[in-house]
Each structure stands twice: as C-alpha cells, then as structure tokens.
Length: 313
Image (cartoon, rainbow, N blue to C red; front, side, top):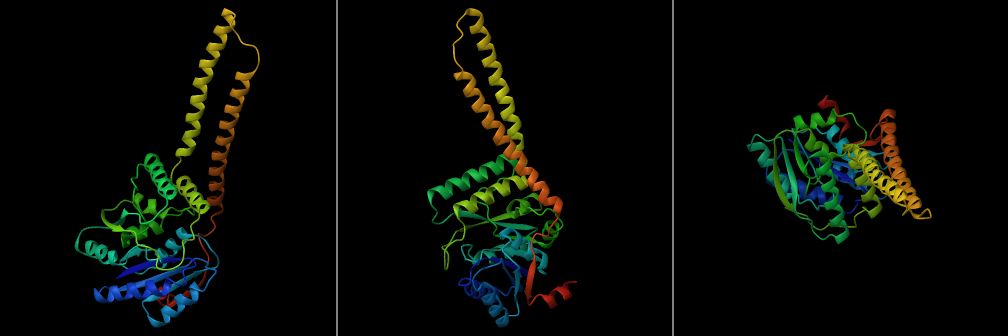
C-alpha cells in the first residue's frame, strides 16, 4: 500500500478535485492506497472539504493543524501518520500530475529502488524573477552541501525504510527536499511537466519565498558562517595592501591630505561586520529554536485516522 500525502493551505476548491482524480487513478491501476490531506491551518473551508471527501471514501484521511505551521511541517505530519509501505508527497493544486504517481509506483514495485524522485522537465509558466531566484537558490544549495537539487521538487515516492529514517531525524527546522536526499538510499528519477493550478492562486509571495529560501539554506548548511571567515580574510588582505601603500607614500612624501580613504574603509568594514553579525545572529536564533524543542506542529483534529493509528500501533 502507498500513502499519498497532500499538504493543503487554503485549497478548498482543489481538495475535491485532488481526491477524485487520485482515487480514480488508484482504482484504475489497482493500487492499494490511503490519501492523507494535511490542513495547514487554512482560513477557508479546506478542512470541511477534506472531511466531506473522507466521509465518501474510507481511504481518505485528514489531519488538521491548530494553526498554520508551514508546508514542511505538513509533510512531516503526513509521514508520521502514514501507514503505507511507501509514501508519495504531492501538491494539492495538481501542478504535480497525479498520473506520475503510477509511474513512480511501478518503478518502486518492480525494481530495487527506495526513492523515486520527480524532477521538473519544465517549470510551467513562471515569471523571470522566480526562475532566476530558483536557479540561484539551487546553485547555493549545491555549492554548499554538494547535493544537486536542480529541478528537484517535493513530488516523490519514498520507501518505508527512508520514511522511518526521516521520522527519526529530530530537528525542528526541516527542509524535506534536501533531507530526503541526504538520508541516501537508492534513487531513481522520473520527469514531469509542471501543470497549471486547477483552481485559485498560489499563496507563495516573494517575501515568503525569500524567507523559505533563507530558512532552508541555514537549516541545512553552515556555508554562510564560512562566508564570514572568507570576508574577514579578504578584508585582511585589502588592509595589508593599503597599509603598505600608505607607508610607501608617507616615506616618499606623496601622502594625501584628508580622510577619504579612512572613511571608505570604515564604511566597508562596518558593513561587513554588521552583515557578519546578522548571519551569526540568525544561526544563534536557529540554535535557540532547536534547544526549546517545541513540536513541529500541533494537531487539532484527525479524520479517519484515529482508528487506523491504533491499528498501526
């Protein structure tokens, strides 16, 4: 059996569509499944729609958070409650084509494979800024961690062994896309074209995407901290060159009057110091969050999962 995990935030119009398309697809291909919708503190009637679909189909389950905790938390909640021999994570807006689940399932079932990862062969309609930002983000991740995540997505099938490994990872600040690659295991790839959203508009803004990128980079690599050291070494080299030049001009009598050079140096060094303190402070805040050891999410209500969780135990 496979568990299909679907994070949903303000997706009231897409929940019925996702439930119908995926259920029909699983039935046509004779695949045993459970579908777990995770309501990430939606402000609309997303949870009510999930409950309606769960009443119609016993294979559909629901998890509702007490508030919005983010997509990462929703994915890990689904992984925790999932009972399947493998788990598939897919977006509720159907930009990840459900038909690819069947391809993933067949590769996993018929081969010695633990992870089947969906990679984007095309990104659909995206503005130039978003495409450029994504390329920069994945470039930084690759350079910092050594993981090539170009065209990667949260759309993937993960065997139970890999799911258990992910569930054992204790950190609160998660980056599923990278963590599922970090745990290793044998991986195969399938390629898909990003589809248009079935209904509604994306809730991702430029601000939220930037925040997500910063959180992901700092939670998975310490490269920004090393950049502070690089800046310090660079400034030391510049200072030595300027010191030698200043002493030479003083000896030969060509020293200039005024403090232009001094002021520029102070502005440059002060900027680097403040940026460095900001980077260090951000990592300290991450340490603070981890030390508090608060849960990744708080579950308010379960639908069709209470009994199944007892069976799982």
